[in-house]
Length: 244
Ligand SMILES: [Zn+2]
Image (tube, rainbow, N blue to C red):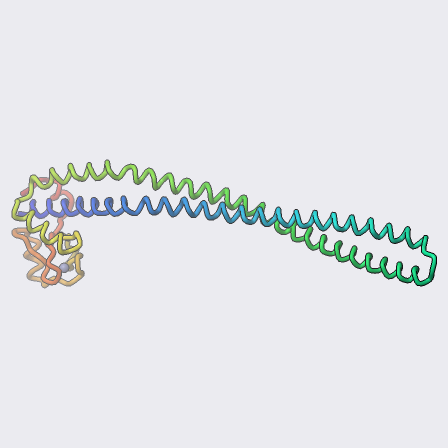
């Protein structure tokens, strides 16, 4: 019986591992998709930042052309000032020139602000481009790892299925049925190795007399509170030694 119990414990390990792999196979494609969209979002954010910067540069060049035009107009006004005939015309022209000077200084101020903003944005862009490159490397490498993991799952499951078939051969059919029945009702965990006088399935304390019986390994004992099969695992030597 002791041998059977230890085989059950091994079977539980195989089944637990297999359940983990099945779950992982479901999760991995979602994780990979998340990484793909994370990278796409970051690339999109950088593209937006680049286009805002280009837009600023375009507006600045427009202002510079406006400034050139305003300077030309000022020159024309100054030439016209030499040709005015009356005092009234002279005063009016001076007024025009004053207005034009104001316009020019407004343009200049705007252009300076835009140049400063351009410098700030250009420095930020450079930093964000290099950040994105680092992120791209990180995300791509994580994605490759996940894809590799996903690709290896089917093979691992097949290995476990073979190991399971071998284990099952050594287990009494009646005991196996009991195991399967408990496993269905206990979210896949039917057998637990006990550690001291504690059920590691539900963490309840086992009565001392009961604990001693389990240690004898003469029959199947189940936890009074969670119903799982309890197995006392001696050292590894006993497990591998094939004693029955
Ligand atoms: Zn329990």
